[in-house]
Length: 231
Image (cartoon, rainbow, N blue to C red; front, side, top):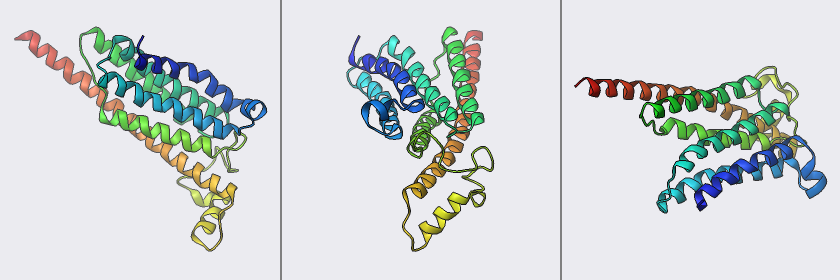
C-alpha cells in the first residue's frame, strides 16, 4: 500500500458519504453546512484525488497493477454516484446519466477483453476531456441546487440550455444580466444550472467520441496483432 493507492481507495470510500450529503439533510442538520456547498466540496475533493494519485504514482515511480485496476473503478463509482444523485434530485435528466454510465460499462468491458488478449488500450485525449467535462458539469449542477432541487420550473420539459426562451426564470435572469439590474441569488443559480445542463451535453458528445476512439483503437490493435501473427 502506497500513497497513490491510498488516495484511490479514499475516493471509493468518499462515494457513500457523497450520496448521503446530496440526498439527505445530513450536512445541514449535523454540520450546519448547506448540502450543495458540502456536496460540491466533497465531490471536487474526490475528483482532485484522481489527478493526484496518478501524478504521484508517476513521479514516485509507484505505478502498480492495483492502481491500474482500481483507479478507473473509483472514477466510475464517483461519477455514477454523483449522476444518480442528481437524477434523484431532478437536477439532471435520466437519459444523460444512462448514456454516460452505459459508456463507462462499455469501455470497461472492452478494455478487459483487450487485456485478456494481451492488448493495451491507453486512455485517449477524448477520454480525459470527457472526465474533466463530467467533473465541471456535475459541480455546476450541485452548486445550482439549494435544498437539492432544480432552480427552474420546467424540469423534464424543454431543455433550458437550448430552448432558454421557454424557461421564465432564465428569461428574467438574462434580462437582468444584460440590463441594468443586479442578479439575485436565485437568478445566479438559474444561470449556473443552465451552464451545467449545457456542459452535460458536452459530456454526452465527448462520451460518444471517446467510446468510438476506444473501439477503433481496439480494432486497429487487434488487426496489427493478427498481421504480426501471420508473418
